[in-house]
Image (cartoon, rainbow over all chains, first blue to last red; front, side, top):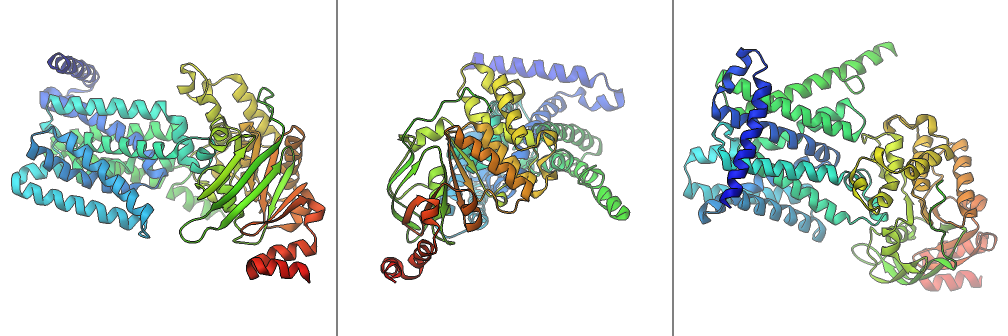
Length: 306
Length: 269
């Protein structure tokens, strides 16, 4: 176990060195903040989180799962609290309650007349409330703030390693299972007719989403992670008409927002999670106005000519 | 069309025994026995709410039957689906046409089940790197429905008839033995209708079984060989000209109004 951890630290250090090799090519005004070890770890974490959130956000957009993403991210809170009580690593608890809640939502949807939006609202607020109650008993309010809003500058090696593993799993799964994911997202009935198990794909995708959310906890926090699971995908959706391209662009937007957001948060000494989300939102605004096919400017222009 | 696909086995293409299915509450179709002949164009005819779509959902596999058995090509339906031998064409409204995909990408997706069963690591690669048989099948299907020129257009840019033909090309590219088409001619222009019927006749001539659902008697009269009159159960089944008579259609509709007794009464008059 310890050799494994040491190996992981070695991998992380190698990745940080690789990222820093690129950063050092930049003018010193830009690369200066990244002299510090905590900034370097924060940078690597943000890049990974931005990338996986961006790629997965395409599926959140296309499956109309924004509310589900919101639900899972809130449902992670009691897991963090319970894991803290039991002395477990927090991500195990977070993953468990996140997954449990999504199963619970599916159960209510299927076995009662309650529709999915109400089922989600009901389950995630209950889970979130439970988390708040437990945490109010055990932890300080700064701890709660870090879980809710992230604290990327406090990321240590264990958390960074976890994020890295989650990133490798999520990206690997999305790439290897691209074909079933395409079928399921575009036309689930066709996927069924071709003998695919849509249940497995459905819950597999939800598990990936949960994994991504858990990995993003320290970076952007519970409340804002859903923005990273919507905004990059929505931006790319306005720009292109091909799913692989949309995934690539959304991933790039996620990474770019994470880097720029981290840098700006350091310069202006403001919350990193919020800044990252604001950068992503600004990119969305640009795409909304300027997109060649679906942009507001283009619509206005074609109406003028008509 | 790629010719290396398995030829369908002889016998009835779809054999249904004692099938009941539905949603919450009373079953929509009850105790259906049905044999659909192979290599023919079969049309399910019935009024709204007769259970045509429900029956299709069971065949496609998105609705589990409450009771009864479905055999396709003499094999368990689940297994037939898994080997990609059931192709399905949904109604246009069931598809999100804003989805970021080109016509070619949608048609290529019909080959994914076959790709997944290939040995080696190639099946994990993007479909660009798939074997030439897959690309040939897609190109042939696109040419069949006259969409080769639009292959790289986003599906969002297509007209209604072109969308229908895209879905038709997807069905063709799959190379399945049984083709299930939900209202294939609704809302299409004359030219698209002719194209679609032409390729369906050819698929039929190749021994494939084409099953369509329609509420449009005109198109059933024009194109079907074999007709199944359905209204929550099978009212009658047989050759088109015997089925689409005034008397038989009245019987089909009456089954909904009066239930089982109504059927007998309607026949007696």
